[in-house]
Length: 79
Image 1 (cartoon, rainbow, N blue to C red):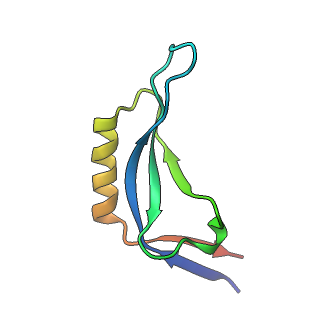
Image 2 (cartoon, rainbow, N blue to C red; image 1 turned 120 degrees about the vertical axis):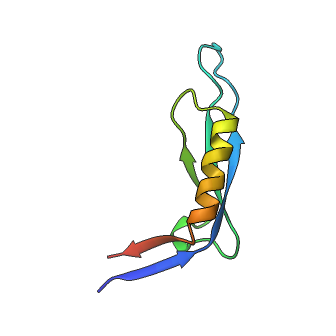
C-alpha cells in the first residue's frame, strides 16, 4: 500500500554566484518554498529545481509564474 503526502509550495527564483573562472553564467534555480508545512521527506532541507545552463532570471520568473499558476501541490509517494 502506498502513502502520498501533498503540500503547497510557492516557486521563487534564486540566483547563485558565477564560477571562479567566470566562464559560465551564474546558476539560476527555482526554490520551492512551503506555503504551509514542508513535506516530511524534506526534513531540515529544501527543494529546488535547477534550470538549464544559460537560463536567466527573466526566463526563470516566467517559469515560476507558470508553475505558481498551474501547480496546486507537490507530492511524495512512499512505497
